[in-house]
Length: 356
Image (tube, rainbow, N blue to C red):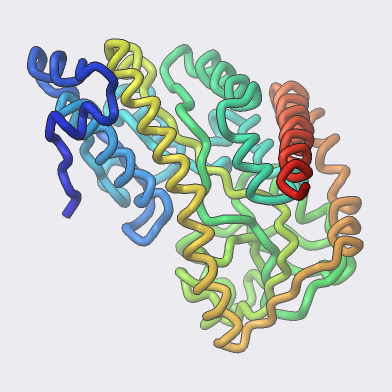
C-alpha cells in the first residue's frame, strides 16, 4: 500500500505559502498515468513510489498519480513512447536502448568509459546543459509531443559478464558471443573489443546462456542476479563499469504545459525526488547482489587502472563512429563530454577542500 500524504500541514512543508491547498480546492484533481515496464523490485518502481507520494502530498491532492507497473499500458520502448506522444500515457521511463529507435542520440549514454563513477554521473545528469540539450532535441524531433523530464539510474553500471572465462583485457573478449540489444551502438562497442554482438530479446536471455547461443552480456549486477543468470552458467563478471545505466523519464509535453505554474513546480520537484531515489536504490541493492554472486561461486574481477585504460583505448573508435553515424551525434557527444569535464573539475575542487 502506498501511503497517502495529503494533510495541509505536509503540503505546506513542500510548498511555501500554502498555495497548493488553494488550487487543489478550486479544481478537479489532475490525473497522471505513469508506467514502467519493470516490476516492484526495480529501481524504476522505487522512483515512481517516491514521485507519487511527493506529488500527491505537495499538491494537497490536487494531482493524483496512477501507477501501471509492467506491460499493462504498453510493452516496449517504441510502443510506450508512442503512448506518451498521443497522450494515452503521461509518464514513462525508458533505457537509452528503448528510446534509441525514436531518439538515436540518447545512445550517447551508452558510450563507454566517459563517466568514471557515480559522483560524476550524478552531477552530469542533474540540471546541466547536457540534459537540457537532450530535452530540446527530443521536443524538436517529436514535434513538441515528448518531453524529457529527468535522467536517473536503472541498475547501476554496465559490466561485461560471461560464461567462459575471466576477462582482464580486451584480448580476453576475442570471439565471445555477447548479447546486445538491437541498437547499433552496443553492437559497435562489442565488435571494437573483438567479440561478436548477438542481439537477443531480454526474456530469451536465460535460455540463450544455457544453450550457448550467447556467452556473455553487458549488464548491471542487480539485473544479473534478479534474472538468476548464474543458474544459466554466467559465472564471470569484470567490473569495468563501461556505461552508467541511465533511465530516461519522459512526459507528454501537452499534459505538462497544461499545468499551472504551481503544479509544474510540484511535478518538476517530484522528478527531482524520483531521480535521487533511483540514484540511491542501485547502490544499496548491488551490495547484496555482489555478495550473492560471489557466494554462489561467481568470479568477480576488478580491473587495475591500467587494464581499464586498455579497455577504453580499445573502445575509442566507437566515439568516432557515433559522431559520424548517429543523427545529432556530434552535438550530443560534445554536450556530454563538456558536462563531464565540468563535473570532474567541480568534484576535484570540492574534494581538495574536504581533504584540507
